[in-house]
Length: 218
Image (cartoon, rainbow, N blue to C red; front, side):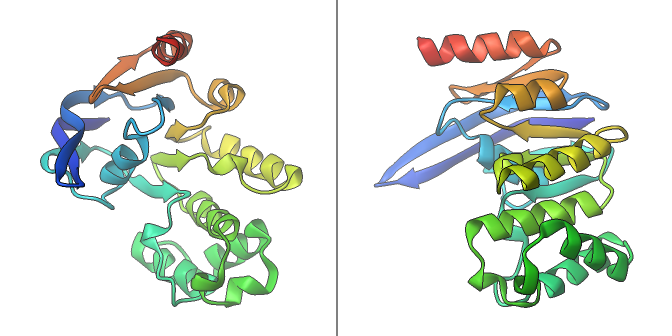
């Protein structure tokens, strides 16, 4: 269970304070993989970063009874001057997993060749996403936070990403942002829609998708 209690966040932009979401108060159930839906600029990535602990809310809190991953597809948990291998080993120690096993898994899975031993500041955005996805999938979490990462890379890498993600979903849950409805239906069984600063939960994924599409059309 992830509990968002009176969660608010906004940003100052050109002298004006713009609210992203306001006093979200909702329990997201355990054992459900959730599609996070919302229009561009609705605050989906911001919400994921706050749930992961990468960003502070203006007010309110996030509580969970299980472990939550960093946001897959977001490089904020990584040091740009360390190599991919060094970042991998550092996070292995942070999360209490075997450093050699994780490094071997990530190097093989991410398929970035010699760049694994080069500083992350030299990486393309695709390389960063491959590395972050590999590290996340190599660490057992109760809930994975995923932001469009299964769309990264060529078709072979996308197939590999979806296969390992599907395997993790047998024992874990996820909050997944994706514009691909097929991915949402393959990996999720419920939905949450972020719109006008509020978050609505739908136990039926198709209802969530229908509501989101109605908002986008109106």
